[in-house]
Image 1 (cartoon, helix red, strand yellow):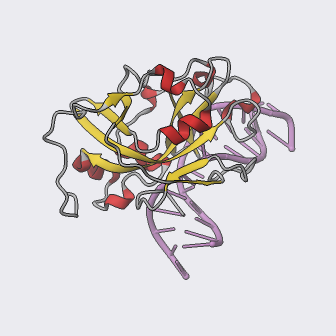
Image 2: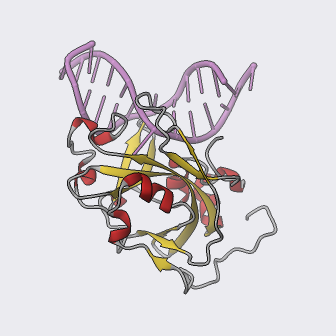
Length: 210
DNA sequence: GATTGGATCGCCT
DNA sequence: GGCGATCCAATCG
């Protein structure tokens, strides 16, 4: 059970009728642009009959082989192979032997870049998220890249699937209220940490850290 | 074949 | 805010 008084969207047919699926051209732009454009979009994950939805509130851009913090910096391996394909595909990887993180590939096909989804504001399927995360606290469901993967029921089998017609998709709401974007250095990396490639919605209460 | 380090989390103080 | 868990993937540090 969620803990505040807000109504969930669970009973509605999802996604909402006026939402627009983000198609491949959206992802085929430069990575920092896509990372910012994804803020305010809705991540929809279907795992069996269970649907979970979160609003993207925090992202990071990883620019490709010339970005030393990007997994593709040292060339193609089995792990990062998805990034070397076309834009609009899910790149899921294991970190610290324990956690998974979810990215979407971006930019031109020959450019192995991606956007890491770092935090979501829970929107629908809250009971599933709470169950998967083992906590009732809304602010602790999706406030980190590995947390949201767990809350949304994303497994490693999602790696390499299309975000246009696969199990995990992004939608935009044309009625989305405007917001301000904060830019900072990326979290948890040792190289190129000063580059302003982390983006989040100013004032949103569901980001991973200030 | 062995070693090293990591785009994190959660619990501790 | 500090640190241990925990283990895979890349590299041979």
